[in-house]
Length: 243
Image (cartoon, rainbow, N blue to C red; front, side, top):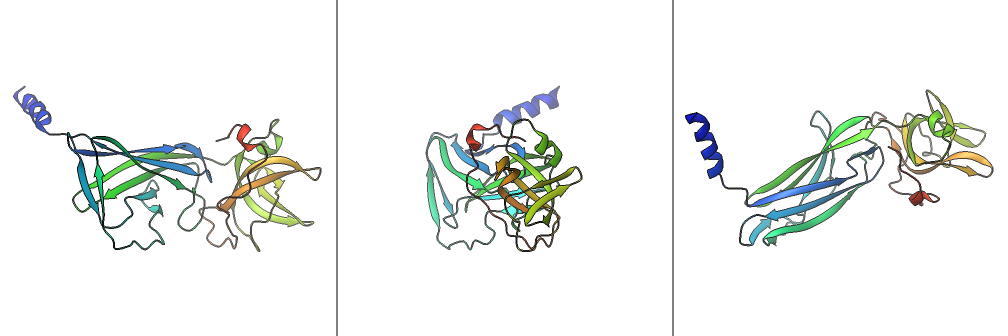
């Protein structure tokens, strides 16, 4: 009883953190190749403004880690920080820092493996303190090609398969079948690719209209060129998004 009282008293005496970082991820449960928005908010819980000095103009770093803790994406990769310190004043209450748009690709421009659980780690490292938080991200498995082709109502979907060429048409094939796609996946694509798009009738033929594509996570030699964003899909805003 005395020990419990001591623990409660110690917890009550521990002051709250003056600054806390909150991160929201949208969507937090989705499919491969779906862009993800990561929003940062800092809350000052004291009664006075707090000033932090950062070692560069970049206030934060975003990382995506797999279940084993391996960093698959880092927002600082390929970016040389400028050696210019930056001060930022956090007034009392909430301060919206930024919304970071992540393409959904790894640093090697590959799609993430799915289904799988990932962690989005965000840090704001100043000279005096580091604010950090982790948010889970869930990716569903790609839909099978036969289910996408057979769907009564076209919907945006993510599929997986290996490309093949026949009669001037490029197809994507998985264990359930194949579907004609609207564009090649590179000059000499090989191995497994992930593609996101929608079934449409093109020149009187049903094809999978590709919005985005990338080599699969285990495709080490795809010889393909990824496209972070293509032309908008026909009426894509009015169609339900599949997971």
